[in-house]
Length: 148
Length: 74
Image (cartoon, rainbow over all chains, first blue to last red; front, top):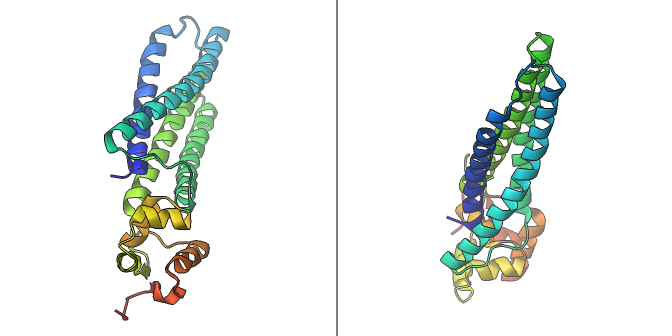
């Protein structure tokens, strides 16, 4: 298995672990009281903001650890640049990822139209963000293994 | 995903050029080893620029390295 395939798998697993662990951490902190209260909106705002920061930092740390382990186990250096195949696969991954997030965004807006509570909209948005991240990693893995 | 219609003789040419490794060819044409692997497996059709760089490396015209569809010339 090549560096890029391994990296895609690590990225996929880390995305799932980061999201699940963050949700488990934040779930008990959901404020009581009215679902439409200022506190509830503050909660969802901080949920998205800190999830973004947390996942960026965690991804950087995991990538560094992965590169160290890769060097130690294979005695090879990881590629230091992205060539035309990498860029093409990256583009396809971004396309699929954005498409999934767009669908999620439209469903989230639709939930408001059919008078669902606002927290439903936030849950759909956050879930679609997570699924789009997973789809991006799966797309990369698929194309690195099966070709473009 | 189906195989690409553009095939190549890169593996054979590497062997005929002092058993050049995939990494050596990758370094010469400015791509990663993964891309050479994908090319040899027929999983990727290179850009015209990369195809020319590979042709220059082997000092051969494009059509002696790449072919379209079924290979009839061995």
